[in-house]
Length: 310
Image 1 (cartoon, rainbow, N blue to C red):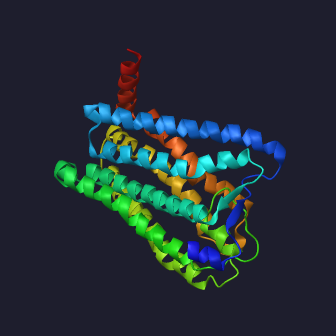
Image 2: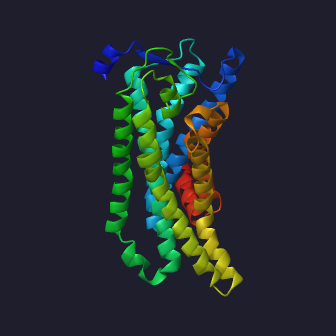
Image 3: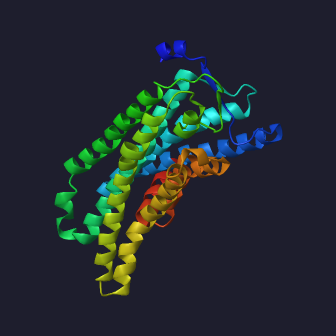
């Protein structure tokens, strides 16, 4: 990074954020501070409830505890920098800091994606092959799925950082975004971005779409299995175990596909707003989505909070 900084006239970037109007900065600071505190508190409670309640020591909640931990890290990669910039006149981030933020954003965001795929597979086995569930989703396969989900995205992220590190930034250093995202940075490059763009549309697309297709496949098989259940109560029970996960998938992937599956030239302010959904709001909403309609999770949280009060 130091070597490239010597070849570039750009040593830092200016993050414009969500609004350039001075009167918007304090309200935005308060809003995102509340969102961040709720995100940390909610996901931490989910982790503590799962760890402290033996009845929640199942594969589904094992994956959920890691998802909550990754959401805390994911939000911490982005929101604290936003909060600093809301109250600062100089909204700059160093070149190395920008690449580091982008690396962890993509690594953690894709870890979320692969954990959601692992959770979909867990629900598929539980509903479509319940008699072999304990064998298939034993501790070793669960640990391997989490290890794979947490490690592979780092190689994907590193690839795009190394390619971005080869570009030259010699004109504007103003990033029209609230964090260092790849599309706004590519628009600032004064060298060819052909390789970067090609990699995003090939390797990047395969990497993003693969877990999504696994989720779709799992839910198609689940839907077929549920429709074969004769009783309405049985169908409701089966669907209830998937409802929370399906809601999170729609929020997460809906916003990602809206932002990234479009031409680089059409990147606009609306994309910044959509980016907030998967970088900030999904991490905050996950604890509510997974606990409000889940009796086991409600019981675990109740026991945890009751123990703290006593």
